Image 1 (cartoon, one colour):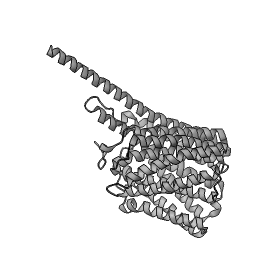
Image 2: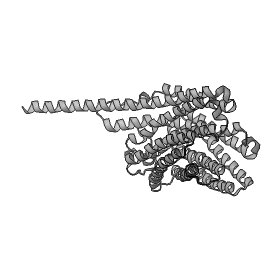
Image 3: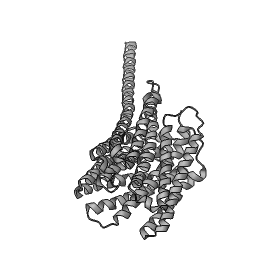
Image 4: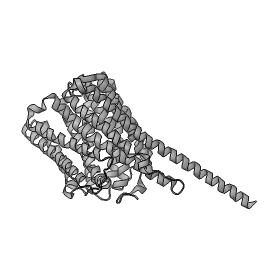
Length: 446
């Protein structure tokens, strides 16, 4: 049975989102390799080239891969609009995004302007295609509900993030003058709050009630949260650029409160689950929302105690909690729902009444999901500890990060392999039946 309110007739081919989903986990493995290579020194400052490379392996390599792939899948199904030429669009986004992320990380580590230029020539067109195709589809949505409103706001924020990122790339690649610290802070906040948090919120309005069997989000939150956050983000940016410190601190605190409200509401809804049997992905949602709530509270403290924000551990925690704690957790959990469901759905469509289709739990058993969650949780706790005591916890954190990324990637590859095997067996069985029917018809005619 299909979840109510979804239109799977317009779903793109399985390979459109799957290429993003299968690529993303291995960027976590690359991040772990970089952490092992650099050691505790990587936690010395958020401005170190290796730290910036590590950050972008997570944000571009893992987060953006899955988020853009999920949008290509969600828009036809949830919003009811089709992204034009889905296979071509996916290729024009996925290939330069993957190569551009690698080029950017090499640029950070080498400091060579040519690598920055190459990364911009790859990432610019990738995000250009994504923004054009997704905006074109999203603004044709027949009904502007809470999810559509949040996605429109998130895509608008992504436009700001990409623009600021290209300017930062121009600073190091072509010598473009910029207030580098201010621009970097704007880039980070618009990326984590405007693009990431609002996109997660828009998706959560659909998938939390659907998959976790909770009450719906309050209407005032689902329709008002994203526009209000974008408005405050714009005001905060103006105050930061104008140098109005008190006003910037006030709006920064309001942003933190908004994130805390969304996180607390989601945690409350998860407590109200109508299904008493524990869901295998519930731990990811809880870890994600607790991390977002902790991020918001720490950001609120930093807004009003500037001396706290200038300490190195606080800066690092404000990166680890929202990136690896909030976003990686929720993406990890959603991948475990999306990929098996899409495999099952496309098998049903291709092999209807021709072969037995495995259940979602056979495609990806709950045991594998739960075990990988404990690896993720260990990586999160060790990364948080490494921000405070890098000499002790950096290498264990790197190993745990590598394990969780490889485990996630292996689990998703397992779904894909079973999908291919079932398709091949079903096609072979269908061909055998057809050949038998032909032989029988010839025998009868003779």
